[in-house]
Every structure is written in C-alpha cells, then in structure tokens.
Image 1 (tube, rainbow, N blue to C red):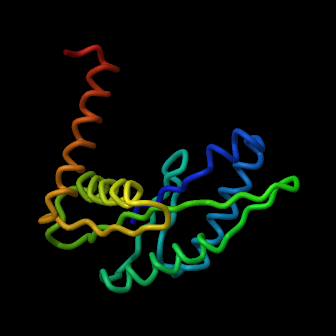
Image 2: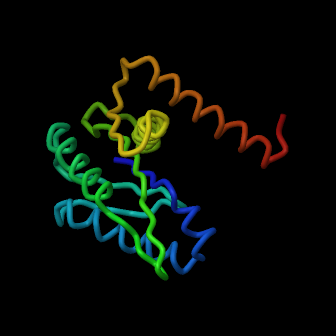
Image 3: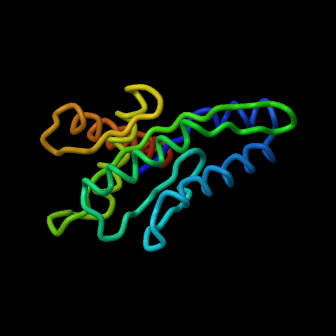
Length: 156
C-alpha cells in the first residue's frame, strides 16, 4: 500500500518544519492504530509512506485502507493556534506468488496512489493490471523516472 498526504507542504510553509515534523509523527500514530503489529509502515520520503500488510488479502487490505482514510479524514492538526486538515490518497496492489520484482510491485502501488490522488482527496485506488488507465499511468511514471535518470547522468 502506498500513501500520499496532501497539505504537508502547506503546514511546513505556514507553520515551519517543526510543525511539519510533528504532523508526520501524529499521522504515523494514526496509521499505526489502524494496522496490525505484523504490518510494516515506513516513510519513503517527503509526503509518501509505504505500508506492507503481511499475509493480508485484498478485501482485508481494503478494510484497513478505508479505516485509515476515515481516521485521517476526521483528524485536525493543531499547532500554535492554527488548525489544518490533511488529505490522503492511498494506492494498493497485491503481492502474490505471480508478482515479479519488488520494484514492479512498488510501481503498481505508486501508480494506483497517483490515480487516487488525481481523483480527489481521501481516495483509495487498487491497482488492476487489466485496467488500461492505471497501466498507462504506471508506464508514464516509468518514463518520467527514465528521463530524470538520463538528465541526471547527462545521457541523451
């Protein structure tokens, strides 16, 4: 599962990075309260988190994702007298015996997450390989990464 928060940059810009750090801590606690002790939550960078649901089928994953969405939707971040709400987008994919490489699974979850984000706040999108729009989005993300890498390495 891939999770992206919205409004963290606004909190950082208006309240400072200490506020942004505190927001991330509080959001981590909210997610942790919704998952099992066997699950693994990690900050991947910036406003992105990854959540690995160990031994969890898609239906149970959907239930957990929806509980996270609900908890964050009801959350208000208070800092120095200011109140902020946070948006969340969740992309989910299944890891099965047919899964290829870890980077492919991450790419699927990332594509689903960005599709959820494009659909509006507090959304869950589940990657389906036969869903042409998600597959196209995954391919777009892959090309963006290739282009960035080529630019960084001064390749043409």
